[in-house]
Structure formats: structure tokens, C-alpha cells
Image (cartoon, rainbow, N blue to C red; front, side, top):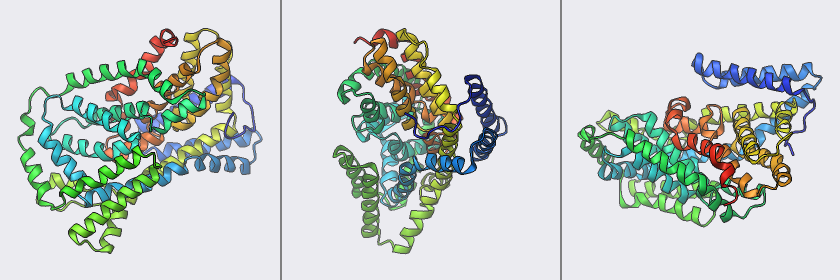
Length: 454
């Protein structure tokens, strides 16, 4: 059931105290002291190693658990490298500048946050990847918000909400396929069933973003300066749409994300070379260090200075630390004991759903990995749902409602670290405005027991 076999089995109260103690320390460092998440994560790792040694676990086993935990995220790590290149190559090809320029032409101040949420949701469903959606159209929208002096926190919340709506509802999404597969539910049956909670969460979120949107368009007076500066870069051309079209086609064709992003990046780079005659040495420098804006309008320079492998190294290092931390939580028995304890004395549908959601959220907070939150919770509760006579589609829906959408709200999680890095908005800053991610588990907890028979 568990990816790393525990070498010690602590008592439940011991696991609970350790859980709240370590999470409290990490939270204090990040929120109270304002440190980067790496420092408290390393401290947490040292504390778990000390605890493991005290409980008779050898250092070799502890080190092996860290390595195993980190290796589980290598797929995401290599994807992050490619996304760094994707952003910089989309700058070179003019794709992101064209998206921003087009956005200024069609999106005004009124309904701005609601429109950002809706468009991001549509693109999220089309691409099936919350991270890709955030790194492409999300970057464009956050740039527009900064240019128009709108709240970056609310804009980031709208982007995250829309991206994770797509992550839940798209048949191309990894998490959607994983949640349905892990409990043996047909994919489209799963999607129809999660719509019972996802659509109401979308409607409520859209209304909230509409209410928060600016009532007038006065802040758009300087949009012409931004558009003129974007045009002066010489990056924008009708070919700038090709990398986006290629990415959509690859996604629809179910081509793996790594290959799809790489193909779009290579095509974007090739277009930049043929269109502008850029030299190879400059290309490789931009791939690693990112694109640097050099217009006469400094706000646009800040807008365009993004991307590159180097920009992903902060994210990648934290992901490796977080997953290594998760490996230690397994080998010391803390997570296995907490998960197993939820299975006891669960008979009523409401208590089972509540326990399932709490487990998925807890794994996200402890380990920071949404795939593990879905896999572990699904494997743990399949027998409980079967014993209680509840359908598996109820379990798969709860996994998505409380597993998939919580990850971007955890500062040290894979999604949280990545999104904060790409949008340059801290997780705790956009968290209060990620309405869809906050509302989805609430609807599941309030009405999940009444909707399971539908």
C-alpha cells in the first residue's frame, strides 16, 4: 500500500504530535520569520533523521528513504526544466508577448478577474495540465494585471482556480486519469460525477471574482504604452501563435507532456532563429538564463524578463527536499500510522467522506505531492467504501475535490512552489483568493453524502 515500507510503528498519539510539531515549525519559519521554505524543510529533515535514529532506524535506511522519496518526483523535475525553456522560447518567438498584447486589446478592467478565471479554466481543460496552463497563459495574465495595476494576489488566485478546474475536469489530465484508475472507475463516469461538486464550485468562484473585479476601466489608460512597447520588441508576428497551436495539438493527441512541451519549445526557438536571425550562442544563453526585456519602457522589460532553466532551480531544489522529507515520514511510520487510523470505525457515508478528504489534505500538507495524496488515499479507502456499500465513483470524486486542488495551496508542495516561482506571487498571498480550490472540498464535505447516489 505504501511506497516506502516503515521501519518503525509509532503510536497514534506520537504520530499526531510529531505531525503537528513539524508542520508547526515549518509554518512558523515560513509565515512568522518569512524565510524561504528550503530552510524549515531542511530542519524538518534533520528532526526526522534524529527521530529515526532514536527509534533504531539505521542512517542507511533513512538516507535510502530520502532518495526514494526524491526519485518519485524526478518526472516533475525534468518537466520543470523543460517548462523553464518553454517560457524563454515563447518569449523569443513572441508567443507570450502576443498573448499579452491580445489580452490588452480584448480584456478591459470590468470583469477582469472573472474573465481571467474563465479563460484559464477553458485553456486548462484543453491542455489538461494546471502547471502548463499557469506557465503559459497564466504568465500573460499576471503580466497584464501588473501593467494595469490590478491586484496580483487576486489575479494569481483566479489563474490557479481556473488552472485547477481544468486539471479536474479535463480527460487529458494526469490527476483525473489517476483518480479514476486507482479506484477502478470509468474516466468519463468519473468526470460526470465530479461535475456535481465542481460545477457549483466554478459558478460560486466566478461570481466572487466578478464581484472583486474593478468597476471601471480607468487603470487601462496606459495600456497603449504597454502595447506600443510590446510592438517595439519586434517579437510579435503571426507565426507567434504556432507554438501555442502545436502545444494544443500535442495535448489533444495525448502526447506525453514532456515531449509536447519540448516540441513546442523547439518550434518556438526555430521560429525565432528563422524570423530574427538569432545566433546559437544567444539561444543557449536565453534557454538557461531566461529572456531579458530591452525596450524603452521599463514596466514591459519587467514583464518580459522571465523563463530559463536557472529560474526553475529554486523550485526544483525545494521539490527534491520536500519529497525527501516525505520519504522520511514514511520510513519512520508517521504517515502510515495516520493513514491507517482513519480506516477504523468508519461506517456512515458522511464520516467516510470526511475522513477521506482529511487524509488527502493531510498527505498534501505532509508530503506536498498531489499524486501521492491521490494514490495513498485511494488505496487506503477502497476497502472502506466497499465495506460500507458506497460506490467507487464517490471515492474518486473525493480524491479530486480534496486532493488535486489542495496542492497549490501548500507553500512547500510541488505545485505551490512552482506556481509561486512562475507567477512571482507567494502561495500565502494568493491562497485567500484561490476560491475554486478552497470551495471544492467544502462542497464535498457539506453535500458529498447526499450526492453519492446520483
